[in-house]
Image (tube, rainbow, N blue to C red; front, top):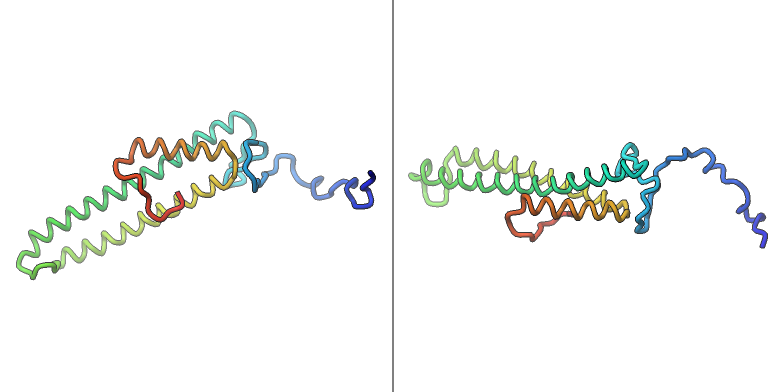
Length: 166
């Protein structure tokens, strides 16, 4: 069957102008790392060695997310402990449930740092989501292994998650 009338036999001029090592964008699940770019064009998998190094980097990045969560949990616990001390020491002459000037400053500073840590977690979780959205099975496994490793190292609390992509 001759399909030349439909332009199928003619060379595609767009393909001739594209570099041989361009990034591929998969919209379906695949295990093929050929022309795989991970989030950035410069993070291009060019062979087995770069694939393994990239997967190890993804494991470390994903494990690091749990480290950021642990830093946030520790900060909040330390902040609550400081608030408890201020309530007893500095506001003992105030009515119950009211904070002194030092407690108000601590509350504002604490809220700012908690908000910054939360923003970092949200950014980090969306970054991990972009890793997963390569639809590459190797990258997806690396994300899962990193989440497992991070939780084993730093996840000393409930595995229940808050609103986040990861």
